[in-house]
Image 1 (cartoon, protein in one colour):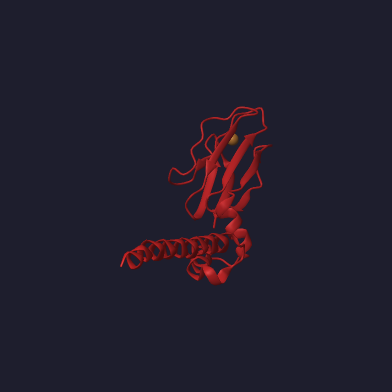
Image 2: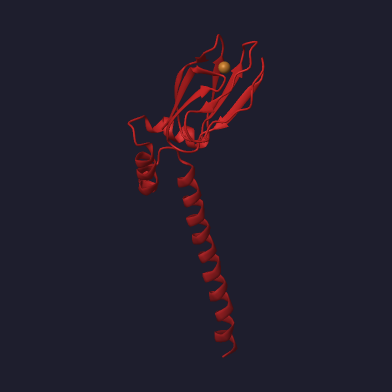
Length: 153
Ligand SMILES: [Cu+2]
């Protein structure tokens, strides 16, 4: 009689230990899978979402890089011109304009308020992060002939 009742805790403890080992293995496997690069089979929905977000055809490695590491692009303002005049970036990237002219310039959206710098004297910079896709054309307010375009994809 006494022996029979003594087995119960041993069985319960064994079940708990086996359960803990199995649970631990499950967690370990999930952790491993999340960290294997290019393991598409484990996350088909995620990769599909990245591709639809991309819109225009570009290598998927570039897209994931831009999601993880937003890039910073430089535009020079020199000789009454933006250089490069036209620039394509990924959503989330930043652009930094640096005025190298002795005259002051601005970075001002043609329409809307996406780009709205103050007057930049020589050596000053204006930085903007583009979070929305689209085409953003801009100019310099005292020199309307100075034009530029940022395409955010
Ligand atoms: Cu100007």
